[in-house]
Length: 306
Image 1 (cartoon, rainbow, N blue to C red):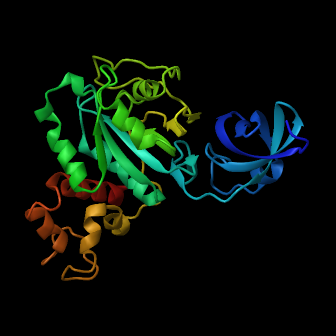
Image 2: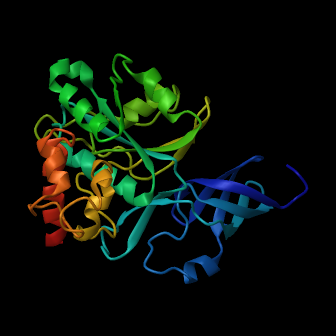
Image 3: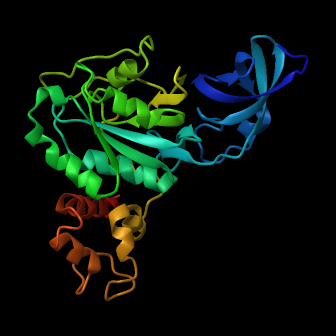
């Protein structure tokens, strides 16, 4: 290690009140200075995985986090115990990779759409991965591919079992910080293991009785890739809330709605049945997929109920 006792690094894992920080001179197990905890305001974690920090070395491999650099972005959700508090899952990402299964568990557009909205809210790029295609004929998932490509998202079909699409996925994540998100059981951990052999992330099968996945990841950890970049597996969730999204702002989070902003008859059109709505006309003409519009209506209704 160099003579300097101060190093720049990135938080790649947290465990309790300790943080693993990766630097150019190796990994260090670091504590957080009390000043950061005292400044905390309705945020569960003052330091998140992905944060860029400055640490001082006490006695290798131990150190302290002295500076938390300003975040370029963050991926958050409401805290489970205190819904008005923010839980930052990961910071400074390049893209959110939304993984779903064509079956086992059952495919649902709404599950994908909520994650994509979270990415849009956070200012992250996003892509959709349809996994487990070995379990179904192409005609069962080709429409889903079309829906998300029409919406402007890169879409990859994969099978962790036979390796289909793994090279496409590797090109998608190379040299980027990517977080894989999706409901439990869709195969995120298996895909990560296929991308980076030897990673050894634990996997489990989907319950035959409930058609739901078992939780295998309970925290976020950044894994360095041998071919460049980082990947992380977001803990599997069966329901995910939208942090700080109001019903009136929801249309702005749909990529395919944006070209029609300001072109409806009413400047404050919410696209829910107003006359001369440009978004509705685009749906009727097939430019916007009806599956996405129907999902928009359902999500808007759920936000009004929250």
